[in-house]
Image (cartoon, rainbow, N blue to C red; front, side, top):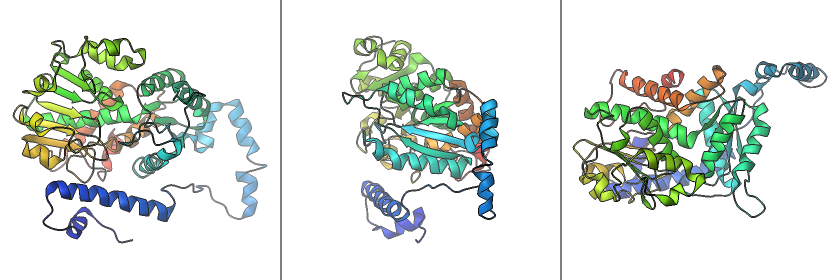
Length: 417
């Protein structure tokens, strides 16, 4: 198959395409090419033995009878499983596929493509082996039950060095992460939340430097209050943002202490925490919140017409706009810039400033495993964000409005996280 880079792809498209048409054409091309490539290869990952087989007699060592000594050694000392098996380098990517990209509930098997992609990135960027485990979390009544995910992970944890939770819809994702953090003997990481939040924070740190603004002084609007953006808000606040200058919106409006619908729903306790901490003036509309805001972080639903140009036009000078929905951002970068945005980041690698969790999880999980950490805390995620931001700033060419974060090809960053 002929390798195509971004320049080659653009050369294949008509030169007179408008920016919106070009962006849509690229998205359609990538989706069609993905279908054909996945069908050709039959997926993205496979199992390859790493031990030498120097003739069939060696199976007496790698399997029975020799392997019995491995079983009894681990029986007597469970920690030996980390050195005598591949457990110490293996991650479980666990999902019930109820919130996959912008496609929603795609059925358990429908999430395998994303989970295999996660496993591929872990191997390629972090040297980790990973297994995609898409499970059916529905109870007898057809409702997705977080307890089924919790029990499943607790049962399989002894085969893995870490657990990567992925694409679990809210509010179940909050309950699953918090319960497993407390009960598991290995680190449990929710990449949609902690991973996205860590990378978004890294991008924000450098965007503020480029724009010559301070995190404690800027006004920030979060658009979307799902797992990713609530975690991002939590990390941004922990990193120094002023909660009195923060407003978050979900599908029903601005979060504040007046949101009795959230207060009365115990499953949404993470959102209620933000209701209590932010928006003390109880701003109710986007028109009020966005006027003069310095930063807009949108992680809501695929665009491109979800974030309105008029919102950006109402923002402060040198406005910072993160539109991180996948596979299509809430507004395309060219439209955001035309509306006055100074710095724009998306989750896609074919646009400048990719703020995607793929910049974080390979190094963060590898580091947690090597350190034999039992938990990956918010402070650890913030430390990773600072390392990621510092790596970008310390490159020879530094940072600029269109280059606030490293790229996945900058392999050196993963060892720093």
